[in-house]
Length: 83
Image 1 (tube, one colour):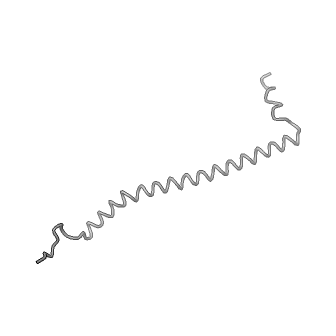
Image 2 (cartoon, helix red, strand yellow):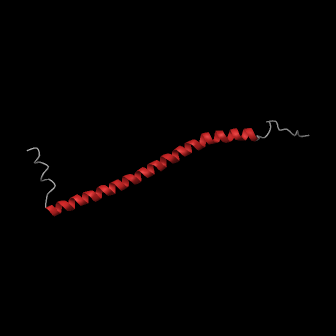
Image 3 (cartoon, rainbow, N blue to C red):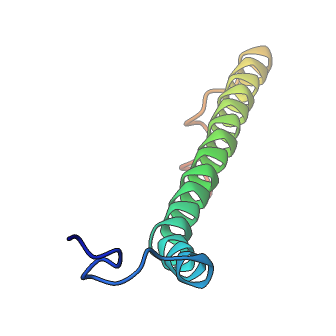
């Protein structure tokens, strides 16, 4: 005859399952949230850097256009300050 109670004990019930769930959340959930947050932070930061690079390129083009209007060469005034 087969006994009704298994040799390894009973099947986990409410409190045991809650503890197992908490352990899984601490082991897998917290690092997953931290990694996702870091990826999101870096993605948002790179978008800002790309916008800054675009703005810098626009400003450099504007400076070059203004220099062409005035007829000024970029190297004209760089060496005059020390002399």
